[in-house]
Image (cartoon, rainbow, N blue to C red; front, side):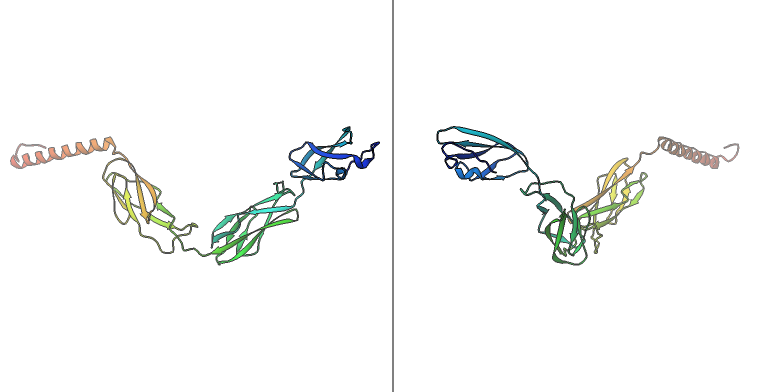
Length: 279
């Protein structure tokens, strides 16, 4: 910033003082408040529109004031990539974020393109997917407008850990006193089937019993019940529904028993009185 005044006492006796009248952030001036400040450097901390003021004062206290508008534009200076560093197991994934930053380290608009030096692949959304071979660290690069930032990722082998149990069928309807076989499968932390199938313990919340092979047998009690397969603190569940018996079936069953009893009684009477007895 430059300003120049004149005075009957000579210009070297003038004192120049700069300040910010308006703008989004503080501004510093160097030098300031001296004759040398007629040529000063203004340092800004944020982009935006500013109004600066310079006051020139002579030895008698007389002043002259002027203002100047200044627009500070954002300039793409860096790209920040996070997180870094990270470790991803083989077959796993990690989402990276890239942020374009201006000369003050503040975010600014900018499209990001992604690349990785090895160990797997990365898509347009910044999702890195590790390959089957451990290694690294590998370099993940985010680029915007010719400016790049990097992060590091290491691929390691992690023993599979049982994380999820899936019970099939997920739901079943079993008639009163009927049965249904359920099965269970275990999956590791990346969703792959466990190479060594775990052993499962079975339980049901009611309505009957379930054996160690996952066979549920209804007790006849109607309702919807939860079947659970557990292993090592991990569990999965399914539902089993036992409907109520139809009322007509119960009535027909009772009537049938009564007729059987009557027919048996008539047969006995016929054997005792074979003559003159008509059934």
